[in-house]
Image (cartoon, rainbow, N blue to C red; front, side, top):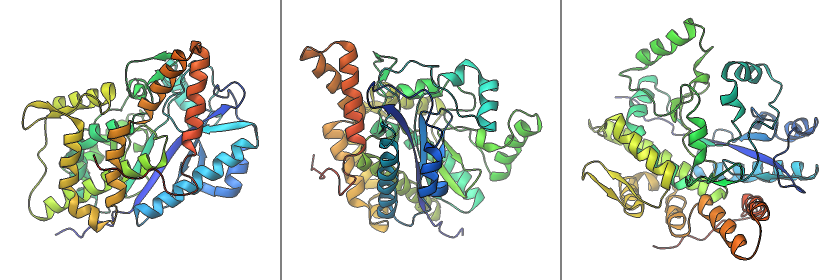
Length: 387
């Protein structure tokens, strides 16, 4: 019997930096900005592909409450440094009106290679995401859970959507970021592997052929981390409000432990055909939580609120084990009041109704995102409601 994993948790978030006056993404970062961030945060802050982005990562945490406190500190600290330069921090997966290809990429060897390799595809990469690492030390267990966890990825994406706009247009999608991301190679749902050695053999084919240097350039929605003994969930939009981010991270962590419990009892979550999971992925990408997802067993579309309650029942024991019942129940708040994508659309439409032009309405959305990014940084977030 495989020893129970540590199920440690770490969260990475990618933020956008906007000009306070124009509300647009900055083209180039102030030369000293990243040095100032690193002076305070060390390796917990790194540049991203575009200079208008900053990535933060919590340390390895034993509890979701600990991860939340670190994330609060990271947002608060980076925001304070950014503001000293007349700029603002925005946690959303797309900017409402910035034009693609106008931002400079970070002059770093890895990013220079990506720019040369991917050309126009990577120049459109003005998108941000949230990644959640969960510690699973056994290699084969990590691969086993990789295949089973794909089922829940659309459900997590739906809860996190924050990218309804692109280049000044309402895209009609709650997570347009996924459309941009899917243009890159080696993205989307993961392949199915029977063992860690089989996974490594396939990765080695790409490495030997000179396509990639290592598995860090495999960008699936969920992947075995190349750097850490973790299973890294990457499908989520970056959540504008921190309590939403913590809800998604806690639910993912609990789901993995539920899958481990099944294995411990000689059971396994049913593996559905990729075409079915892809359909739910599209529905989450398009509608978020609004139009429901397919229940494969019933063969029908089920309201997201019903599916969420079923998820809560499945991970009930795990929520107690990790002491995160309140954090997961916050998903009811998200369902009742909407994700960041809903708030952005409501803000835009409200501004138009009140007489604003399109440009002014888009600027109002940016102001909302900047405010929401910092909401709750001095204490608890929204109170959980019963739905």
